Image (cartoon, rainbow, N blue to C red; front, side, top):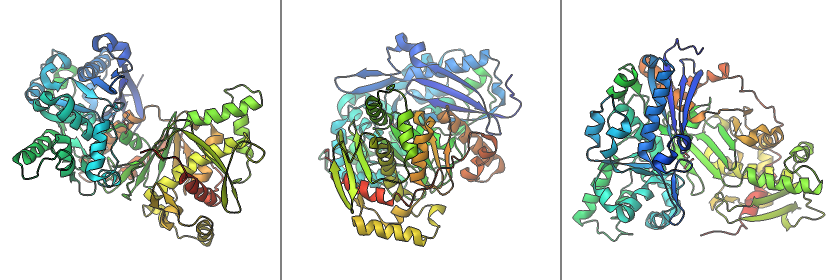
Amino acid sequence: MVDYSSKLFLGFDLSTQQLKIIVTDEDLKPLKTYNVEFDSQYKSKYGIHKGVKANEEDGEVISPVLMWLDAIDYLFTQMKQDDFPFDKVVGISGSGQQHGSIYWSHEAESLLNNLKPNQDLSKQLTNAFSWEYSPNWQDHSTNSEASDFHNAVGKENLAKITGSRAHLRFTGLQIRKFATRSHKSEYEKTSRISIVSSFVTSILLGKIANLEESDACGMNLYNISKSSYNEDLLALAAGVNSKIDKVDKSDPIYEKSIDEVRQKLGDITPITYESSGEISNYFVERYKFNKNCKIYSFTGDNLATILSLPLQPNDCLVSLGTSTTVLLITKNYEPSSQYHLFKHPTMPEHYMGMLCYCNGSLAREKARDEINKKYKLDQKSWDKFNELLDSQKAFDNKLGIYFPLGEIIPHAPAQTIRAILKDGEIEKCKIGDEFKIEDDACAIVESQTLSCRLRAGPMLSKSGDANKEESTDEINEAYNKLIDTFGQLKTDGKDQTKDSLIARPNRCYYVGGASNNLSIINKMGSIFGPINGNYKVEIPNACALGGAYKASWSYKCEEEKKFIPYDDYIKKLFDTNDELKDLKCEDKWIEYFKGVGMLAKMEETLMEVD
Ligand code: XUL
């Protein structure tokens, strides 16, 4: 029996293929989860596959919005059948897949306001949308819009303003396509535009909610430093940019179009613990929620993930799936066209950096398979690969660029390069006597980790405690040697500074499939060299859990009528989560300065795209 005696919180996770709801108590304990897989429930009703409709010809990938409404009613009905005590829920928040936009009709507000508890949401809200689909983050139909965004303000400058260069999935590009190319008349009929996070908040509130600030950073429209929309980018979204669309700024249509798109998007509420309002009467009457249950703004799924762990400034969460994703918390707004920065969803003055690599597990598996082939071992066994990792005594001056797929960071086509460092010179080489196939095991894990270290450095520098540490003689010596050997280092076209090269993470957390391979994460941990340890964790419901924790933190702040720093609040997870054990990796951070220099120089020789 689940113990529902405490006040309860719900955390939603509306992702591409399912909706999940997690129930937590006041002590951050997860009590129960409910989920519905879209394909198993709605495949024929909505004609979807893996949660979406995809058109291979033009790259369009979209999700049916009414299906999400059905999923909300479906899960609450399941909970009702379980006699779930809805009246004990005091706060709800959650997460949504990032970037997707929802186009509300002019009738939406009044339909949301007058929902009848005896009818399903999807039935009553059929006319609430000017388009009943939402572009999914996998959509890649906006190549021309991406060029327009870059040509309008410059790629690096766009990253500087909005935290990211133009990405096909980002909301601003999708809106431009919608307004000027694919759905002009629907755009006219649109009263408001939500993103997935603010869409769910709106449904629960029974009124259209403002965009949540951290998720709004995934639009390519928001000036992060100024905390306001950027006018040139709004003009692009609306199709009236003076440079690209040749609309003169003095032309009345310019002002009018910008006002319109600004109104449709609505205001962006700065990061807050304050609730967006109480739950809509529809849910009170239909499911017997308490009418005082607070709705706190939802955020993006990656942003909610960092809320699910006791992360402090300068902590890194390394997710080792098919792709590798690194999420880190920083005070330092150091944008680059190679990664993303978002505002942190609960810590004002802090940001979440996000590095996304295509070549993660698959590239490592390819190296493993070649080694196993040589030794006639079972293809899928990691034993030999791990033995090679574990037996390495010191960095042996061999690295590689292992990109079986084109890579995002650095932006480069598929290629494999192996090299050896000899007397300070980097010599490219092929598999042979000097660089054996066995050397790939260490070289791939080292190279992948060093690439993250090179990108994380600028974000971690001058942020939090890590850099309060005085640079010791040992560090100074290693740094001087690095510069003597390799000269000025650049990453993605930008100079690395002493601060960025000597910045260490506070803690590193490892999640995802390959985090179960201790040889791999021990090696990674020894290279990252976090000041306060490496942790392997399992957080199967991270996005939903982060949502529930956002709700319980907000509730606590409101109850105590004061801002409680989120990192202080979430620290208590260390007391309750047995998973959080330090891996005790050997610290080889200083030894790998050489690897840092070597990889940075090798990257300068990569074949480039665009
Ligand atoms: C992030 C992104 C994806 C989606 C997945 O930029 O597009 O991670 O958020 O749901």
